[in-house]
Picture 1: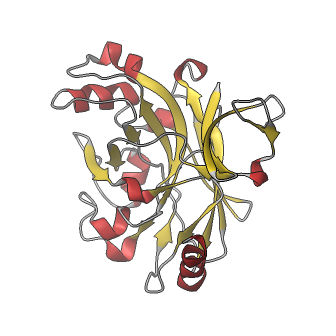
Picture 2: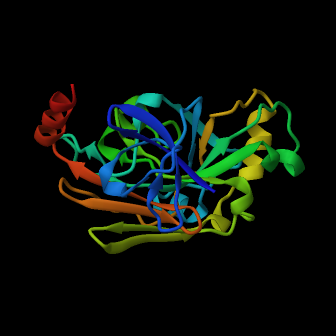
Length: 258
């Protein structure tokens, strides 16, 4: 099952995807995707993000692949939904997408063995964790301006149940910018797979329902400009679309919403 969250007619709704790909409200009403405002598919708990978790991406950045997971935290302010707008600051000279498999935790767990790790997973979705390289001080420890800006991480639109993704380590990732394929990869190339990441995190802390693990991105990064439409897609999960806007359009949109 594919589940999501939307804003519609002044209320927040839990929805599912109908067979014809329309949005089904709890009362059975069907809506087109364009009729609703998308929210992240879950209310986030702690958000974990992986750096350099694909060997080809590490090579792309001229870094040695890590020997232990490189994990940093993100605030809930960073997340926004499908078809939303992300700001490219006027002083940015290089801003790129990052297509990532996002793992949503469904059960509380501490000191979980790798063999049991996937039992903690509620499901999977797609995240696009934009980065502005101008702001980067250390590839291994991204600073706040790189990864914690408001609305820098679209996620969704759907949370796909764990049982509907029997092997999260065999999924194709694709990014398209203005309908042109710019990034392709597979989760099979992760250095630390999903079960290993859960085992690692729970070795020293508790994971709780709603926690999200962003598992990193493969090689194939490219600069994006205001006006670009970026799609990040993971097979058997979902397709996430997002538009890059400049400061003027971003702040005008923010003022209109307030």
